[in-house]
Amino acid sequence: MAGTILLLVLLFTITPAGTAISNEIQYVLNPSDNLALGTILVIALILGIMHGATPDEHTWPITFSYAIGSYSTRKGMKAGFAFSAGFTIQRAILTTLGFLGLAAIYKVYNLDGPVYVIVGIVMAVAGFYILNKKLYLHLDIGKRLMGGEHHTEHAERVPIHEAGPKNVSLKMAVVHGLIAGWGFGAYSTIITFILAPQVPGLIYAPLVGMMFGIGTMIMQIIFGALFANLARIKKLSEEQIKHVGRMTAGRTLYYGGIAFAIIGLLIILFPLIDNFALSTGNPIPNLDSITIATVLVLIVVGAIGFGNLAIELRKILKYKNVRGT
Image 1: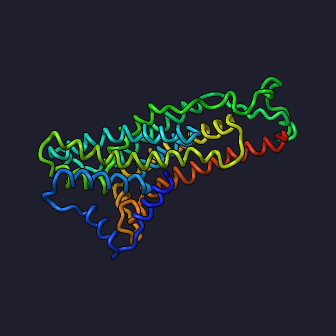
Image 2: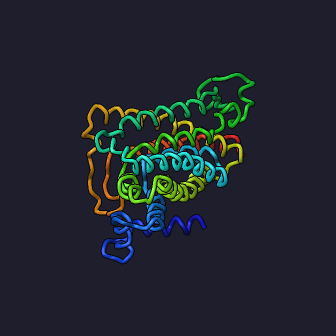
Image 3: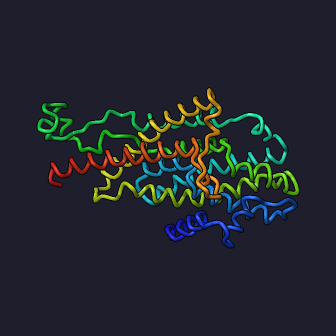
């Protein structure tokens, strides 16, 4: 079911221009004035689904990090839900500010750099917490592989998944959602400056952000389930899967957080970096151009996330082959 929904959304987002669906997408991305409340909320939901389905630096890196550390479909879905819950609360606040006209600060100041730095620090702290436990590569054939004794006889008897990284905290995923949501992009612009000001009254303004957040949540839950099962691509024991997932999550959060902070500082020092965009010809935001945000997603999810997943799987498989298990 999840795969079918994902496929439909991806097909929806890559439909060539000129088709009926493309016209509907353009209507959603360029909503008119004087819309009814129901129409506004439906458009916000669709925008949220599109936002969650496309590679966004405010969602994918964090959902990947927490979901891969959850090592099961159910827990991966929980990770996607936890992050999106915090994100939804923030978006409800943002659209309320949009209705009041207070979100105009985004038109004056570029907050991407500061948000990246703060998100990066929180990611690094979460990653450090997960990894902050002495790790032993307790291979009892260490002498052969390492060229000498590298730990005690007691350590050699400790399985590779023990004395390992801590569990991933979903509470931190909620915190990340609350923080990361303050980043601003094309989708944020539509719901904050076009849709939110059209609602009949202040009481309805949070609903715009809430519907957008729910749309994002739907896709992040799906991606969370998919990411969580990446550690299961090899026939490993449950404990080995947990170890691989937690190590990958910890390193992705830690080193990904450092990458976020560095890029955030670069944007603060050199704002023009944030304006770089190489057009792809696709009309969908997050797919329409290659930007610094795209590079950030590739670094954190692609290089750091999948890179560490491959490293940990290789270590486990090497251990299994040596032990004959």
